[in-house]
Image 1 (spheres, rainbow, N blue to C red):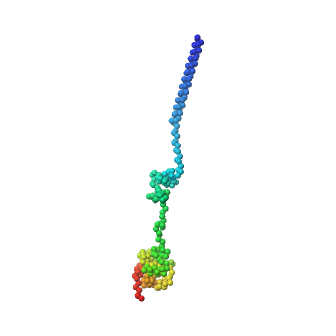
Image 2 (image 1 turned 90 degrees about the vertical axis):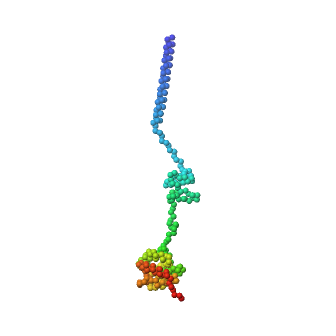
Image 3 (image 1 turned 120 degrees about the vertical axis):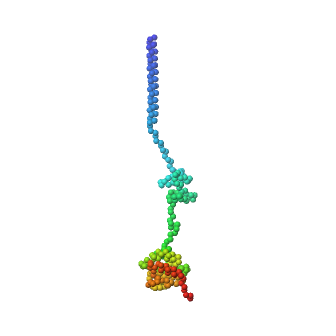
Length: 264
């Protein structure tokens, strides 16, 4: 009987020990799991947040896929819908026939200023007359004495013939005074047929008192040399200097009065 009790007691002790061991092991496992979860949570709370990853922009395949594509010069290129980037002035838009319409600041659709039209194309520049030789760039000079006589007869304007030389200093001074006198230039342009030459003609009537320079002779529309119109009191009656502009102007006005020729 005692032996049986001892056996039962031993079994009970073993069962209690086994139960205590299992409970202890379960407590340790629960403690380990809680510690692991707390550590993981703490690491997640203190770890830095990863930076957002920017997705690369899709490449622009054509101007039809976007509204505006800035080029290297930052100029706007309008698409087919003619939309411009916000905050910028409206760019020029090609019209239906493909021509560029300049905007308010004079730039075209590509942002470049339109080519300027040369002034020579807008208005023909008046070139100096090739026969002027410095006596008046605006005067319509004739080329030959024969042509001058025909024009004088046709237009009913008197003819002024100026003999001069490039090497003559008096001629140079007279030329400067002649070309700079406004009234003489006006009358020569509007009321006279003008002819200047640097050689003598075959008409000896143009040298009433000899061959010298400078020498100015008038011929009326009736093709008569006006030898009566001179520079009084001088040895060379048809010579003028730069100081004789008033005398020359008076003679120009005098030759405008028709010469009364005797009836035949």
